Length: 296
Image: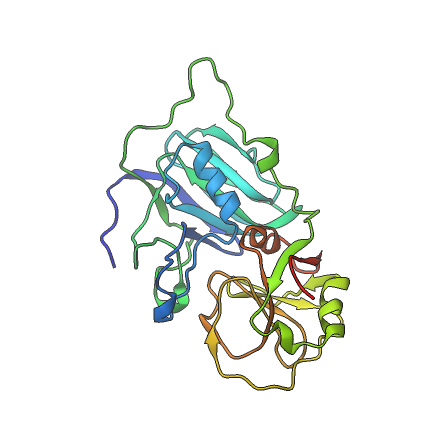
C-alpha cells in the first residue's frame, strides 16, 4: 500500500453508505496480467464529468454510490459536483454546487441509472494500492465506505473558484445522459464469434435482453431467449472488460470492471468500450439492445 496522499481536515462524514459507496478513480490498468482486475469507476464518463466540472485532474478520486440510500454530512463549506444516476438527490446533478457546513447530501430514491458520483474540489484523499484508490475489497484493496467515515480532501492547489461574473457551472447538455433511454450498444465480434451458429448470432442482436438482478461490479447477467452454447470445448484464456461470455445456460454475461481476468466460456462479442458506461447504468429489470459493428 502506498502512503495516503497529503490531505486536509475532513470535509464530509458518511451518515449512511446506502446500498454501497466506495472510493474509485480511473482504476489500475496494467495489472490484469497478474490477475488483478483493472477496477475503476463503473461509469467512467460520469465520474470524469464530475471531476471536470470542478477542474480536478482526471485521475482524482470520487465517491461512487450504488442506487439509493447514501447520505453525507457536510463538515466544511466546499464545492461539490454530482453526476451519474438520478437517485432523487437533495442537490442538483451535472453541475457544481456550493455546500455549507451542516448540510446533508442525500440520494433518496431511484429514477434512472444505477451509479452516481460525488466529486470534491481537489479530489478525495484516499490510500492507494497498486497505483489506484479504487476499492476492490475482495482482493483486500481498500474497503467500502461505512457509517461514520470522515472523508478528506487532497491537499493541493489551486482551489476551485467560479470565474468572475459566472454564477453556475453546468455540464454540456450532451454530457447529461438520460439513462432511462439507452441507445443500442455497439458490439464487436468476440474471439469465438465463428463458433456460434448464424441463427444464434442473429438471435443475440434481434432481441432485447434484460439486466438480471444478479449483476454487480464483476459482471452483468442478461436474460432472454437463450443462445445455443457451442459444442466445442476451450481452455481458459484472457478476458477483456466488456466481453460477452456465454455460459452453459445460454444467458450472456458481460465482464465488467472487477470481473475475472481469464475465463473458459466462449465469447460471442465484446461491447465497445465507449458504450460500457451506458450498459452499467441500465438498472436490473430494464431492457438493453445490442447492435453489431461488424459481423457476417
